[in-house]
Image 1: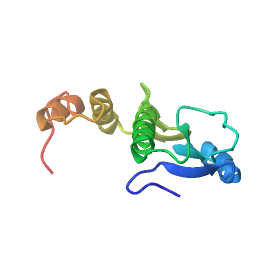
Image 2: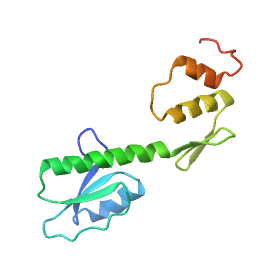
Image 3: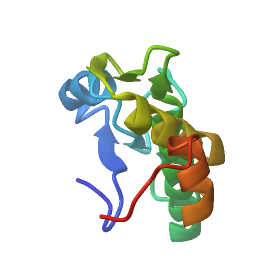
Length: 133
């Protein structure tokens, strides 16, 4: 089951153990809801956490929030662009043109912050020959 409006998947442990490996392979954030008498799971990575249930809703929500934040941080670090304009997203690559590569670098450097049109113009068109489309 997924949480509303998030990408964190809630799994009953050890009942949903079969789905866990698939979600780990997909790098999906997951919260394991451990049965009261169930064994504690070994956490595989930073996108996984567990809580023994029943647990206060605030505790579950806090763990979900942390997993969402970790997932966002992980996704932002999955993007790279090299000096030749090759953009790598996880294992996929695409070659960008010089202007697109320069614009993408400017966006990556700001990491989600708003960039003014003037800053983008300076990043993409160093010769100043940009026109409006």
